[in-house]
Amino acid sequence: MCKKTKKEFIIEEIEKSGYPLELYVSGILKDQDWSIFPNQFYFDKDSGKGREFDIRAEKEYIIDELDSLLTIRLLIECKKIPGNAWVFFEGPQIQNTPIASFPTIVTILDALGINSEDATNKIVLPLLFEKLHYDKGFFASGYKEIVLDRKQSKKSDISNIWDSEITLIKTIPSEIQDCLSDELMVSQIDDFKTDGFDSWHSSGASQRIYFLYPLIVFQGDIYSTSFPLSEENLIETDYICLSRDYKSAEYEFDGAIDILKKEYFEKYLIELEGDFQKIKQSTISNWGEFIDKEKDLLYLNSQR
Image 1 (cartoon, rainbow, N blue to C red):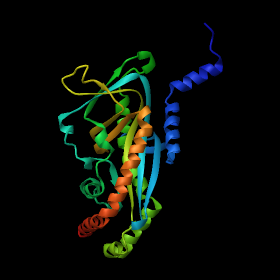
Image 2: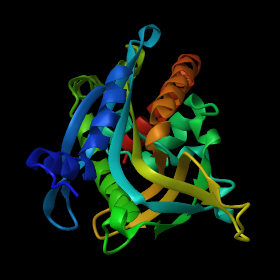
Image 3: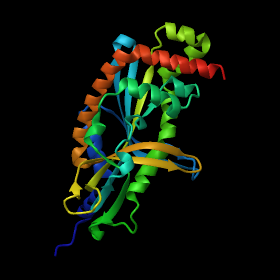
């Protein structure tokens, strides 16, 4: 057996890491005209340490008719574990999961301290969303990660999904703050605080609205299943929508995380593009009602 050269060894070690998967994901995003920001920093309040997640990607949708801007922001973790299989379980509570539980939406309401879960999502989602890509996925409430090949897995324990989930969950608050520091958002907030909501509303109330989607791109096997367990019920799949309710000392999250195989990522982006074309049209149709409801919340908040 021939001994490996130094360069062969280096290439083999790089290929074992997750970096080629990150480059693959970034390449597809670039091909579809997304803005890409790799290795993004966030501060983990639970541990008191700075950490990173793999990729932030953005695409803007201008609504000329409303002088407003919709921005979709993907928060991506990449996992390459070809020796593992992820098996997701369908739970009875997932059957009626409301579409309003995801994604996270950031508007001027968040900047003014009005709770997003109680206000923004309840206003924006029912008005702006039609049937979106979530209808195509398998809703899961639990999972088990199984080592198929210990040599390829190279993991002493099985916590890869959990690690990625928690990273994304802890990333969202800092990403919300980043959205609120956007120049256009700051300008709109200043106008509102200076002139009051009546002037802000009568001037057209142009806005930037962010939609934050956390997702994991996985290189390995994904299965969906339901009980009773059987070979017929164990189905290899490309895309899972995982419901997650998480609480810690510093974080609280009740929403969903998209999990998809590497091979499905390009199609996922195409479906997401279709979603936002629907959202753009729905926004134009329902903008007046959305602004009126938002104005009511702004007024109630100002009376506190």
